[in-house]
Length: 233
Image (cartoon, rainbow, N blue to C red; front, side, top):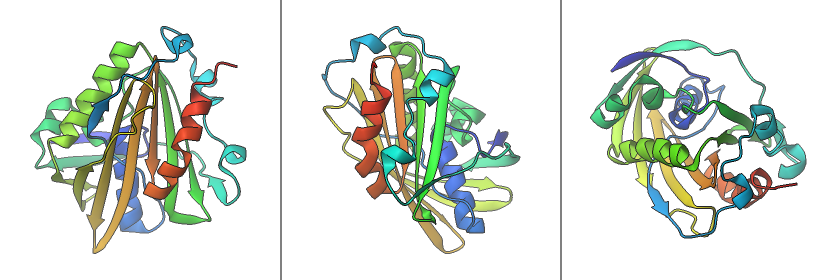
């Protein structure tokens, strides 16, 4: 499947594509793609249910340098660059269409994102995305994408003429967080170099949080990101 995509877009596999760029150019860095879904019976934050939050309000709930601590540098936003991307060996992703399969933003109108490098290293990065919509739309949207990725443990992406071998592995979802949880480990390999990224998604009421990046950083900041995203004051 060949489509035109913005390789700097947010979204589940945007993380992957940005990481791939890091592998081929050694200048950008990691983020992930989706898969592996699990549900828990933890109570929703009732004030989030049915509450419409603007993108500006979501931005205020993202982690910042004061939340992360020393050693973190915010990555600047860059203008979107469009490249031809071909997805090989994953019919499930092809069925989802170009944006979902190759890194376009999730189809929710209210969203915010940020990303940081740690200690100046492009191989240690963490990114955060927040989305707001009805619980049903959030759940159906991300579940569909994660299921597609789960169905393709290995496949290949060709972007800008560079082939990237991709592999996904389900991780235990972080139970006890929000209403639904998903998590996976992704490995992106090209030109003899591999990058491993973790992506964990949590839906709490009408908020969807996605944390992506180096596994250690995702595990370290997940609870803090969820607490800030779902704070009611």
